[in-house]
Length: 215
Image (cartoon, rainbow, N blue to C red):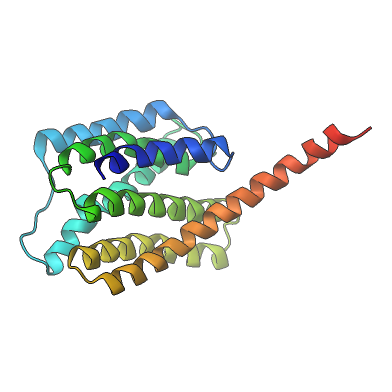
């Protein structure tokens, strides 16, 4: 399980890069800030803590474990694009996945003693799900900035991290049925995102194939 936590993010990143689903990102900035985040955890520890299974445990999961680690790359991506260090055309999905590689290495070592799939398997999966979903909503807003796109996309951006943290909380509390239900709910936009990106990539490649096959 520690190996899964260590390798899942980089393997997923290189897989979607190889299929053309994710474009090349500014790896230097992403890896730098991701490494800085992991280093801050090593030096200063986590921002919150909880000793029970109540709402404080949910906030702990949201801030330190599940949601904020997936949200932070997008906040920095927007900031870097706003100050023109990177372009808004830089793929936010690839940027966020690269960011999380140093964190996944740190967490694999930090959580290895726990030996629990909730931390070592579910958390990396929830990071990936959130990144796919959030990048999809951001891309929708950027491609068609109309109110009927912006409003549901913003609702999705708010809802996805909340549902992801709730799924982790339910699994951590051994409430597996509700945990799977929340996991299914948060996975839907991620699945739609990957299908949409794969279809877009396929349509982009068709003219090249037709040109190649012309006599």
